Every structure is written in structure tokens, then in C-alpha cells.
Length: 444
Image (tube, rainbow, N blue to C red; front, side):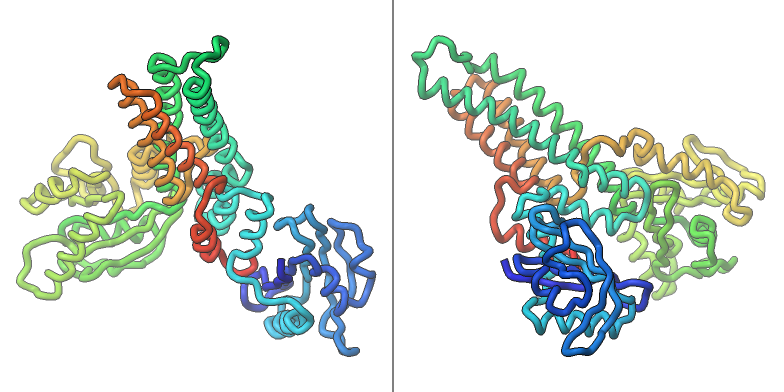
């Protein structure tokens, strides 16, 4: 493979910048501009002190980490040059590397090489980006699980069980005269198919929660004008993000903010108050609010507990009823004059009721049931492939119950086996790998 290099640390000034180099001749090439120990004689997994020097000009004082194939991140000979974290000096060293025989790495190319050299599978590779992008503790734990091969082992176990069934079916078809083979008929297949389906269903259910945990929950705050939606947003964010006023219709557009509520991230959207209005601009805000409700995963409906419920309140209760939602009675400090079942009383003004709201959100999102140590599918690609494998097994079970020929059931088993293989990269189209790793940042 070609010798590649890239800056692996974020752009900007800092204490240290790291330039990653990889390829068959990576150590040999870096040695040309390194003054210190002979890097080609340094054992792997060592770090050495020296200077970057080219044509008798000293560029920087550095530490160089040496990793020798196959004991490196990507399975290739590699160096990591730790230089001072100035933008100029980092780019000067990078230009030197390009001059002496390296080429600039493409986004995700180091991780792609690690996959192609069997240093990791696709689930482990994708977990790297999930770790980088993790916004809360649960997201980090779930991503670390994938990196530690828990998902890989689970997928391999499922595939091995399917492969065993396929092998026995083939033996029965090709060598029916053998007396010592297992008789693979409908009665033999059904319990095995049911067990596989049950295991996949558990993974898919847990992954629905995991997806919410990792990506964050798109949360709409809705209600009539002047019930305290913006005050609730400010209370959750602990800052004056939205304008608070006694004048109805103050919020005319969507106000956004994000918060880590315990171990889950809420992407909050404060919407314009929903009511009938002759104000054209306000009506545009109302239309946007209704669209946000449709797109949100969680809806927080705010009502004013100090005033009688109005027609718009009941319409909003009906509107959000089909979504995951919580009804929040604001202004408890003014003595509520009505009571409904399953509501949370708060005072956004006095910042009261935060713990009760947090507990209700956790319960509604089933986060209390989420075990971060269970294997989960952490992105849409993995989830879609598992769903296809699950559907294929359901079709196989339906065919078995319909007493169809085992050779027809085998087709669905092969489909499930292949789809699970695409999750880990055991079977994959080349264009998928290229597309997947280009999403990685440079230097990964």
C-alpha cells in the first residue's frame, strides 16, 4: 500500500500536534528527516526524542512513536510525529512528508486500512466515530461496547448458528442415504428459528433505545402562548436562551438548544404558541410548530395550571396523543386550579420540578431499562441490515409452519446469513466500504 500521512489532531493552536504516517516504508521515510536515533532500528511500540531536520534546517523538536506491522492500529508500519501544536510548524512538517514520498491520506483511510488488514471489523470501525461524536455517558458506554467486540461476537454467534443449519440442510439434500446425519425437517428447524428470532428481536429492541441515546432526542416544547414554554426551555438549559414576556405570541420562530439531562441528550425546540391569530407572521410560526411536533421524537406539552383549560389546550392534548409525550403543568407556584392524571407540576419561574421531569423522561424513553453492556446496533446501516436478517428468518419460520419444502426455507436462511455478514464486513460490496470510511475525519 502507498505511504500516507495526515494531521490527526484538531486544527488550531495547542500544546501538541500529531501527524500520523502509515505504509510499508513509513518508518524509513520519516527516518530521512529525523535527527536522533535510527528509527529503523528502534523496536516497535517505542517513542523516541529528536528533531525534524531537512537540508540542515531544524523544523521542530519532536517525539516520534514507532509501530511496526502488524502490531499497529492499521496493521501497517507507522509513525506518529508529536510536534509542538502551532498551525504553521505542523503544516511545515506535513509539507516535508509530502515532499519525501508520502501522499495525503483520504478521510478515514487509516481506519479503512485497519479493516482491510483485519485489525477490526465494520462494527468496531464505526464505533470509533461514535466515540468521537458521543454527547453523553450512555452514548460513550454503548460505543465502547462495540469497540470491545461485543457486537461482533454476538453477530458471529448468530451467523454460526445459521451456518450450522445451512450445513445440515445441505448434507440432508446431497447425502440422504447417510444414516448418522441429523434429519433436518420442519420439526427440527422451527425451534432453532424461533430461538434466533427471539435473540434478534432483543437486540433490535435494545437498539431502538440505543439509537435515541447516541443521537439525542429531538424534543419539542409546545403549548398555547404565554404558558411558560420559553421559561421551561431556559430552566432546562439553565440560561436565558429564549425571550420571556407576558405578551402572548412573543416566540415567533423555533428556538433551539441542547442539554445533557443526566445520561441522555435532549435537542430542545421551543416552538411558537399555538392558537388562532390574525397576525400573519405569528401564523407562520404556528405552522412551523405543528411541523416540529410531527418530526419530534418527544413532545413536552406545557399547560398553565393557574388558569382554566381552554379549547386550544384540549386540541393540543389530542394532537400530541399519538407521540411520545409528557404533559407539564406550569406555574405551580400560583396554586393549580385543576388536576389531570399523569401530569408533572413545575414552576419554571422558580425552577421547581426538575427532578420529577427528568425521572418522567427517563421512564417514558425506557432509559431505566437500557443496559449499556448489552450489544446494540449503533447506526442506521447496522439496524437496517439486522432488520432484513430478522425478516428473512421470520419468512423462514412462516414457510416452516406452512410445511413448505426445506430447500425453500434454506433460501431465507442464506439471506439472513449474508445480511448479518454485511454488518461486520464479512460480506460487503466494495462501494459500501469506500462510502462508509469517507465519513470519517481526516487522520482516522
